[in-house]
Image (tube, rainbow, N blue to C red; front, side, top):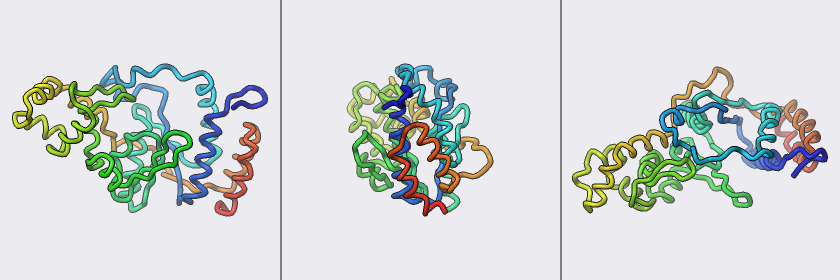
Length: 270
């Protein structure tokens, strides 16, 4: 999908379709964005292999990312990007802060790493592959899927690994095996402290050989809740002046089919 001048817009269009649908259907009291920064994070410094398998972004996507700040500014909600941290850490910190203040929070993401943050007043709307209906994960839904509490998921990753983030697994342990071990011992810290009780011997030996790796992977997989967020509003509603800015930008990007959807949100923004 491109403009008449050849500017690629497919990712931006898909993002706008999803966000306008969310604003219409969810009618949130406010919303905010979190973004990754351009520089390495503390995870890259701790482990050079972290996400090292990912190649450079394709040129059309890179070109669209240059337009993204203008688009987010037009929506008028706070944008959080903290050097040294990933967007997931920012989302986790922001969600926990708002929930502690008594506000219900819904994180919208395509990253399952955020499932570990689910708790009272925080759930996750998981947006999977295009065309699939989003799924809401509250605490019960996470436990049904994994047989684990949300806060135990980093321990699962420490044993089973994560291909997407290039986090290594313990040889011989798959996802179901990792979940069984975490259910039995609670977390990898307890598991490693009770290795003599693990059977069979080959499993105990594998865990013992990978002990340092397990500890490091768990630290990398666990989201931070102490990101130093800047002062200022934590969220904002869609305002009428934002609708005007979006209309102008949508026409520039040739998103003509989305303009009527803005008009449908106008009454809620006044």
